[in-house]
Length: 461
Length: 109
Image 1 (cartoon, each protein chain N blue to C red):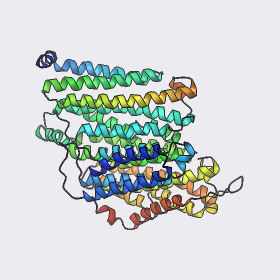
Image 2: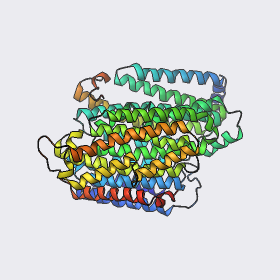
Image 3: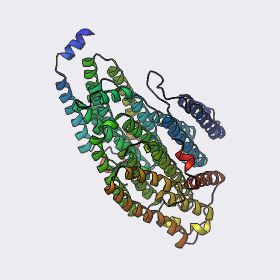
Image 4: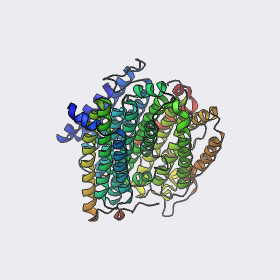
């Protein structure tokens, strides 16, 4: 709880700093606040999983680990933001505040114990993002992305709420332990309302994580939003939503496994193919990453399809690998776009010669996203495939392997552009400021470390 | 208060369920087929309000206050959402002079 309170207060403090024109203090204060929040989370580690505040939130190790991951990734993204926000607008404090509030929502989503908190968390996380996506007020693409994100977000919230209401109608409680008790007590007389509620909740959550067939907003929104906000959306928001998803399905709906598995299985297969095949056809790096994020949502859903003891640890490992690689990829994209003014693949030509360090970090990120051994992405994919294998879902496994192969193809296209294609108009120097160097190197090193010594992560959950 | 609950309970629960589902469906269909952003937002509100109604009905039938409290959560957050949403619509209108979502189809694959 300390972390959530710290972050909310920190947001307000940062707003005041902006009011008193202390622009240079914004980033340090925010980072110190994030460190304090992580401190609170670590202090609560292994302290038992009793729900607090009348059963509203619970800080078990699942919630804490996903919260820490969200905070760390936000910290990395904010480090990249040093000059980025200043180029967009003069009111920099608002960005930090909105991102902190959104992060608060993300923590709430990963630690809810009552559907009210799930709803509040998702809303706090999304409403601030609607603003952040549209923060370039005169940029047409940003406007369009904000409007689409808002409409789709509000629409999906409606489904989520209707699902929660039907569950309430069937069980008479919003508390997830109460809902679980209902499922266990009445194994044969579960009300039809309950089944409808599960489906609607599934639809609402699939909208949030961007799984097909509810993914159509994702590419447009990711493409139109400022790059840093895209990186935040595709990492922190996705990770937190998955934590919420996991808690709901692994804790509450497990006894009804036979009912929702076929539905989820269909969603996973459609998601994988939609994401990967569309990503193949893109010429823009940013849009390719948007589609690849859809495909990764599909892989992460594996752990929920074959829910078991390893699921939490699998999703956590996958989230770390995916988030770190995304931060590197989007960070690299910011630098390339700053130099070339374009986010097409062609802009990456000859990056291997002009800036070898950036090229090598992007290469490692791409290998990690593709799931090549010795990177964190491989461990994540291995965990996911392993959980499915234990469940004997052979068809799914074959389809996933085909998709992984397609994935390798489009991720390596960037690498080919960086090292083997020559630029037409001569090489442009891509400069790399210190803060980018620090973030990209940290993310790369951690990616490789997890790839080499996976035990340090697998033991956590 | 008791008389209100008795009045609510005078109507069978299924009627509330069907009524709210119909309103919710009207909202969903409206979001999917209408082209005017303001009307789409009204349809979203319709969806949320059908949820509120259903929550109140369930809550009255079960004699459990938590459903009604949830209605307040929904109202407060829906208001926040609409405030942001209208600001976005105004921003879009300033740039395009239109509230038709067809005017926003530049980002297409």
